[in-house]
Image (cartoon, rainbow, N blue to C red; front, top):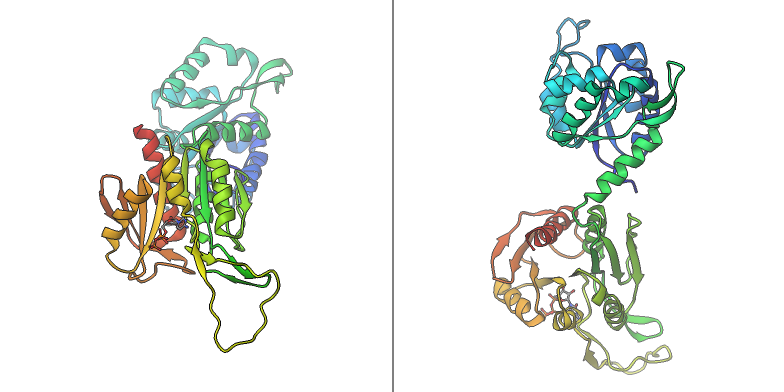
Length: 404
Ligand code: CTP
């Protein structure tokens, strides 16, 4: 999945022949799953029509502060447009537009919006080879870079003037690749490895029966997807569940029993920076597993159980620098029991679920959790979707690394 998926992109088009390439650019953004709004300078409409770009972007195109043809002229709020965007791209960026961006000469909607933007701004220059090298254009590039804007270098080749050299706007595919690489390199968990456990475990009684629980695995899969969205490489050790990972950065290791999950976790733990135990691991398993299906006989039947290994506690016992997060599912004395688990399992953070909270627990789409850290700082959260709880948990991971 592209890092552009779900991103809100504001494309500013200025008046150069390369504007015709923005039709492909918008298509590629939409294909990557981005939401696109386009602002055109008046001059750019000579090179590509607003209808083309509005059709491809599936949004109206903005080009003036208000629509002159409209009787009840509606103000195009440049501040709202700028605040909407996760990133802004000016492509093609002509020398005229670049120079206005440096001086704040906001005589059109594009420049006014640029000046209001708080998101990262990229510009893809397009001009003739001598213009591209002119000191005044170079000084615009330098000024914009000093403002924190990012330049997507022009490419070499045949130019509209008939000359050949550097100055062609980067090809749409290369602009997309540049943006993806730049955004990925800035993801907060880039370079981090995270081990996550998810789902139930099944403990065999005989070849056809098992002891299990109602965990769906959703919380663990949401955590894995969110961690991958933040750039982490994820090893997801999952018990039996129908969920699938949505991101190629997630490697799923499918297991069945608590012992399988224990073995898989210990295989990877030394190599990871973070481990999150979201699985509902069986605490007990049948002491003896029958090799043949157990036949119905006496009126009463009992199974002797033995304890499974506590995976999380075993990781806590050997952890070095890993940031270790556990869950606690409690029905009484929640806070006190959760604090005991932090100590007993040597955790950095515990995510407490109370079954007394409506909307929390197994087979639900929502969860209501309380965070408790190593210093016993307690932070109750609102009832939220499991995806949002995953975002909150990963925010804790990100702030751990930004602090340390
Ligand atoms: N856990 C684990 N291995 C086990 C049991 C639990 O890794 N054999 C992990 C769970 O993934 C969870 C945490 O330990 O992150 C707490 O699980 P919970 O069921 O709340 O507590 P238990 O430690 O099993 O204690 P109890 O059932 O007595 O409350």
